[in-house]
Length: 301
Image (cartoon, rainbow, N blue to C red; front, top):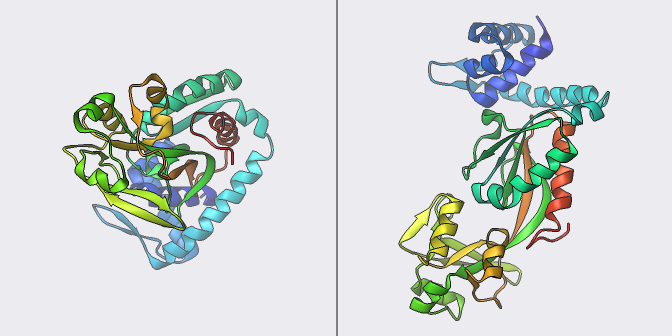
């Protein structure tokens, strides 16, 4: 039995939660994957996974073993990549994830330019505002805005974008503009519902942060839904500058409370810690870093 293949099968079984998913990835059968992991358990002399009809769960021994497996596979992948990174960088598939609005406004045109530079790379772009499980979804690289707290992810900063308070001229004509942050409580606000802190907006205040609870009759778990509602005059929004820069320049939206400091959101390239280092991914990260640091609302890092 190939020990490395068995270890890879074990790691992917933990990440996907399914022998069947691993079998589909590796082009084999579910019983074959189960046999590989059972063989691995025999080799290490301990049960690594508890199986049930609904889920897989790590044993204590499996949890300890998994940490070493990640290090082992990373070292092996680094050794393989150093042989011919240039060839790998020029061909193959990249599965990328990004929020819907960011993908439409910032990413797709840049991926066109990236393709021109690396014509052998195939792009598989998934636009979704969910914070999906990158390992389970087989994502090579995700672009995310905001702060991350998942220790299973490796993040590289690409740039930043400030959040801005905005509203449409129609909304301001009907309801007036807030003169201070506390006035937001009396306004309809368009809330992004895809965040665990939906309805709470944060503003830097010296060395601390001030939070404002906002309400409104419209919320959406879609970044495009939020932008559409703000443009249609349904309320005030607090959104990344990159999403609304063109609308501000065209007068379709107006900035509010410009004297108030706002959040500065990092834009990060994110990948699972268990995913092998890839020259294709490294090329895309370097490309996006160059591109995004010159975009509206960005700052060099």
